[in-house]
Length: 359
Image 1 (cartoon, rainbow, N blue to C red):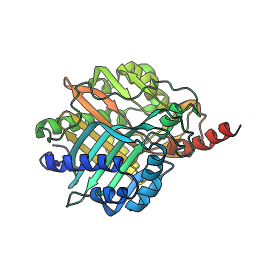
Image 2 (cartoon, rainbow, N blue to C red; image 1 turned 90 degrees about the vertical axis):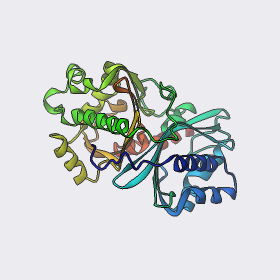
Image 3 (tube, rainbow, N blue to C red; image 1 turned 30 degrees about the vertical axis):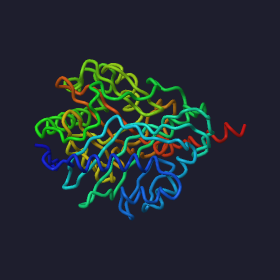
């Protein structure tokens, strides 16, 4: 068993379809209908946590004003396209988690990003916590704002090391799951993810941080030879363990000095700084973890996104969605609030974009 994860209490098919339908209804609603659409989905006083620069919204009205109305105003034909839609129970609470894209024609500016009058795909990782009546009482929305900047032609950073293309759906084409997964399979999936996390946490960056050591260390027992790692804009996507190490893991570990020690010691130090997971679930061949924030580190090394070290502490809002296939982790989608992270590193990506546009 996995601590605090209950494979027998996963949201049933009725709850899953209701949340799925109401999320799509919210995206499709316009004008005054938006108020009714969000009321059908979430408690009036729900906590909405949205990627920077939107951040915290206390209640549905605030979420509409700061997040949804501006997005719909920019893309009047906005629609929602889920590629992963899973559920589970963690610490006695029910969760729905999704990966996908909001799609629409960008007719107006959004967050200062200039309109393109072309289709835009705003990728998301979203986790919804449900109350006892099946309504959302907390929403965590990691929207890849930086990738919209890329699509609009106003990229503010050095080129990515990984591929910039749109995230695909799962290889197995079964990511939207309206039936809870087999409990044994669900436990196996999240257990494998947490075992892989342990190898990452317990690797000694201070003594062994080389490309060769990262490829050879125990994480390799968990990743499929044809693994795909889908990172946010600014990092990009990679293939294979060597591609993952070259395109993300080594530059990331050089830049960010994390707590070191056993998994338990690392988790305790993260918790001391307010970081850790609020969700750890499995759903058949899928698993999900996430934190707001999940990671605490010191930005003490250079190179990440082409930037020098700031010497500052940083906190990362991250989700991980995994597909377990052929006994191993085959694919990993990683929504990460890059604008929030960059701001802690001393870079305001939106301000840099505005200055470029001004000139």
